[in-house]
Length: 112
Image (tube, rainbow, N blue to C red; front, side, top):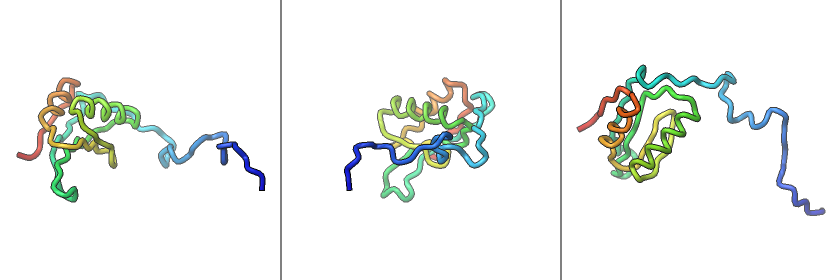
């Protein structure tokens, strides 16, 4: 069997359909002044390691990714997006609350 150096396995005119949501419509971001977000801390299921969660955001995928990147840079730690919730490693509730208020969001800090 001859070896082919081509890296393309399969292609279509529509591109990667897995990246589109089921309806094919991109979610629209709400303005920050219309959003009430919750910034909390959780350690359940993470072997005692604290994770800061930013919940109740209504943002498009691109906006959510950009916001996550900027929060990770401000906190100086890693993070991810899971089910529309931003997870930042470590307890950074106050830093994130200050940044989000500066962006115009209504913030509630959860937990003690």
